[in-house]
Length: 433
Image (tube, rainbow, N blue to C red; front, top):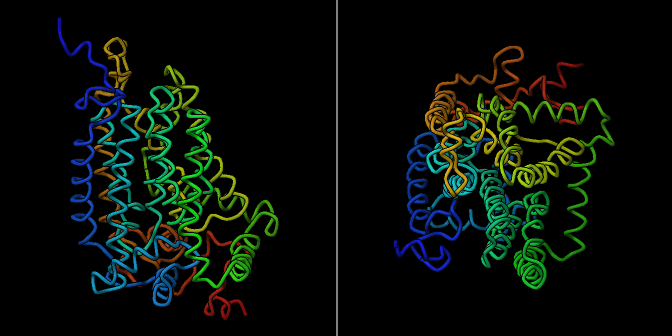
């Protein structure tokens, strides 16, 4: 009799407690490989200095603050890395590269809960070459953290549904708290997925985990409030920001046509520039998800992960392409599920882990998609001053290409993608007179 057959996975340190869980050593190797991949692909195309309005704003804030009001942990970490690197902007770029690597590992770990390891690795490779993800990892921007946190929470929620572990809620609380300090919208839009994790571990452990989450958030929040000059000043400045960036751009001010319809189109273009033709396989991924043993729960989980963002972005504001990363963990999983061939023989070959041989062709197809997306990023001829629709598209979405990253942003504003509340440049205003 095989002695290994009587071992409990949870008691054997060489065996992960869940069939989809890689070992700790495998995670470390994946992180090392991701760091190498990111630095090799981002450094040659990285932006050498600030070119966009947000980047100038980030640099201005870290000159005078350690804990700014918005994006507190992101700006604090960037300032520290900038001091170590001897260049403030380089600190932002290095941090974004590290966060991109963490996002890839998080996506790989999340996909491992759904598909076989080769398909999960190939799915992460698709994201590594996605033009918008590639671009945001080579400039000053904190959007890649959305993927790192979101994919991790989905991975925990999926695993804790069938094989709950004591570390699941604690790890989710720490990651979400850090993500909230990094970008406040992460804490707001991904809170429902976190609550699903807590519900599985109710009651005592869930309450303790919620307390940990609250304490970690209070740590950076109190430091930020102290530097901001107190709660009253923070509330006044936040209200002003919410009015100009939120209400004036929302459906309540702009109406149903100039706000949500325009934002939905912008979201669609951003997702297309991120996942490209992989999106064609999302419908088939949904159909296959329904046939899985836990398909109902996964569909609910996917819905819960995207609906808060969709409501916020369609009713209030969808700004830059990076906002689309809130939808990518769920959509990428559906792409990977839908892209592989399926047949009766491979269905019979499904093992105890629930992985089906139907994804035998998925890795090769995903690698082909990754190659296509990489070519798009590397060779797309971004031209901000191109006449017509193409110029507006490049200025709004195709900035995140090899050419676009190092091209100074044009003063010309796009004729498309703007709402009635968008700032009007002096040149455009003069042309209207």
